[in-house]
Image 1: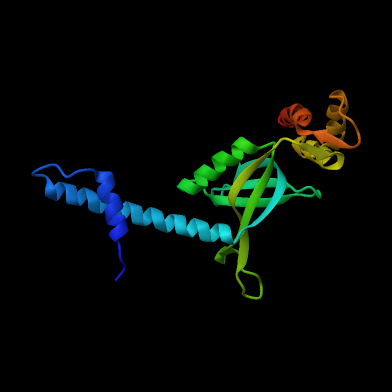
Image 2 (image 1 turned 180 degrees about the horizontal axis):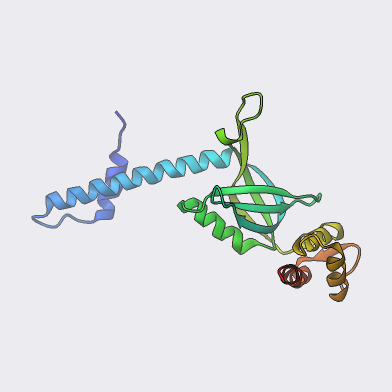
Amino acid sequence: MADYTHLVAAAAHAAGPCPEGQEATWQARVRDLAVELAFTAREVDQAMKTLDETHPFSAYLEKIEIEPTSRRGLLTLRPPGGGTETIRTEQQDTNRGAAMISRAEELVGRWVLVYRYNEPTAASRKQRGEFGNVRMVARLMDLGEGALAFSIAQSIITADAGGDASLAVRLWRDAGLPERGMIPVADLEPVRQRARAAANR
């Protein structure tokens, strides 16, 4: 039998002194608090196990969308080497999913340290009958604005322009951005906004 003495003690401390003549009500309050603490402890334990299995890497957080089918947040990332990588949050209607989506929305347009883990899923079975994995985000840390290599920055503007390379080039030149070297993210963001606006017309 598990020993819950420490949880009961913590719950009793949180409940405060027992009012005279209200012993039954106080005991029920302590019991409810102890149960809540037990659930919280299990959630913390699971979160720590997940973090132990993560593979952290740095990337530029380009955008976040909500997948219509799964209701998960879908993050588009650009690691320093170029290319794109997508990673998902938990479902939007869960506390952790909603919190991670909100956090990612705050960090769009910035460099982040991504703690990634693989979640097995029956929905992505491979043809030979094995289970596949979904890449999930456990934590995001803000690394600041920084700068992007020219080729990566240009690819982002083209994507924001709906794939219209000529529009992306025109907006780039209109903004007076350099055509080589590192491009500060702060200088890139106004161009991204104009590209998205033009693509949505």
